[in-house]
View 1: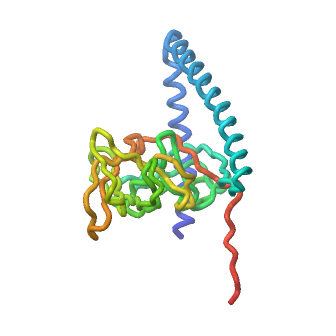
View 2: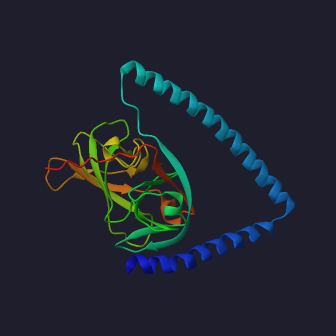
View 3: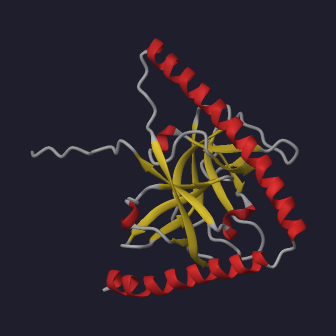
Length: 251
């Protein structure tokens, strides 16, 4: 019944999302010719910058493959990026969700990682015919393995109940005691290959203070997430090109 109700609501959400896009299009048509010329120049500069980065990424990828062949290392898991429009936000103290305008019609799988230019957005927790639901990294139900940039030791990141005021935050625990963080030099928390869903090295947030945890063995602290997390208009879903299949063995 829940799935049927969601599918019944989805066309209205999708239609409203397209109407908002159309409204934005006509609003942009109201800009003067001079403003459009300046915007075009800015887009041209950005295009040149991204083309340079794309060529550099190809060179680095070739070097990685060469080193993997020399060291006989397994290749990293490859993904394709499916860009999706955010058409609805369900934000409260106890759950943080986004509804995307793509679902099974674009082969989006449940459990897929969702990212944006600022880092990790969350994880796909529900997929319908034309929509999918993302649990944000700030949600209290979200949990993943992570590590601090430049330190291979794993830590645990989890979302917390949000106050509703200010920027989104999370919590990191099981941090080694020799790590030191301060407001002038905060530690960058990133994803790790141990997380499975997320590729390693994607930004999560920054930690400006660590304190002894409840056990006294490890440290814990608040994670300042990207403030744009709650106002996203488009995100990218990472769809594995080689999904990991779990083999079942009969006893």
